Length: 410
Ligand SMILES: *Cc1c(COP(=O)(O)O)cnc(C)c1O
Image 1 (tube, protein in one colour):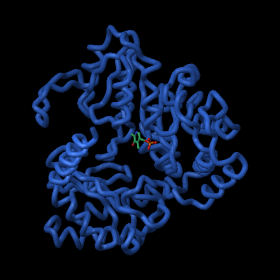
Image 2 (tube, rainbow, N blue to C red):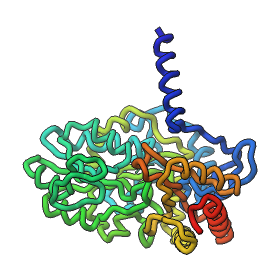
Image 3 (cartoon, protein in one colour):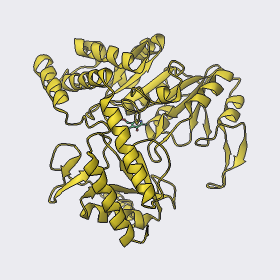
């Protein structure tokens, strides 16, 4: 039987390659950090990790993880409700809720699972989910698993309108129009990324919360690209937007700024968390987070609760890079987030330029369709608190040099 499928898969893989969409995986020969070595290559400066605060290989976090493993063992071989809950898991749930400013929190193996498990128990076919068109794949999948009626608003468009979207030629609605149309549903939930990872733009949560309040909807925010560093004390987009306490459900990952290992969380009102413990399928039917990861994440939250030094450093680095790129004449998407999209528009140019930058010792990735719309190809730079001023300046120098060579800047 496999013969036919094999041929089919070969053809599909060839087609992916022919389209230039094949994702090859570069092998890193060192721990994650500002400086890494790619297998068979030299040391490069890394500008494409989600290691926003430089905690991925932080000595205090490695030590805490090792200690947790020594004390609590390697794995639990159980889901939480059978025999997979240890003291550190309860402590991490408490620490995450405290850090995020919610009543309670519940751990998942990943934020992908958190988003996969959060909607279905809370919303049935009489309810509505209203989501931003650019939401993360895991929100989209979580919504698919849930029976609620669905509305999608055009990314960033909060108005009470329905218009033909010039990019797609299809009708597109604003959030307020969706909320009006969903008015007869029993519960309505507005779901959005806090930060959209391809553009680095921050959702206008103040307006989203105002609209949700006006139409009696709950608000769910996935803050994976914000927890730990966005907002004055790193509490994320609700803090940045001044809506702390108005977001009903926050999901986020431990796999980015908070040490970058893995794990996710739903932080929310007490009854929501309690109910998810009874009903969320990825929680009930998937293994407990390993003690080593729990210990490391606890240390990360502890570090960030006591000091804003790392997020301040990241903010300064981001400003330095954004100002340098603008002065050099590059077209970057404006904003304040450490995701800095360098717009090149043409697919091939984005990939060729990323390759040239790697030759210059700067590791960045070109993004093109289908990850971003056609004709909107870019290099996505990600700044880290682990970068020094000299690292940022070296990246700027390389961008200027390669940009001039390739005719992108003068
Ligand atoms: C990275 C990311 C996720 C997935 O997080 P994992 O913990 O790696 O599964 C979910 N949502 C958003 C918005 C993300 O950026």
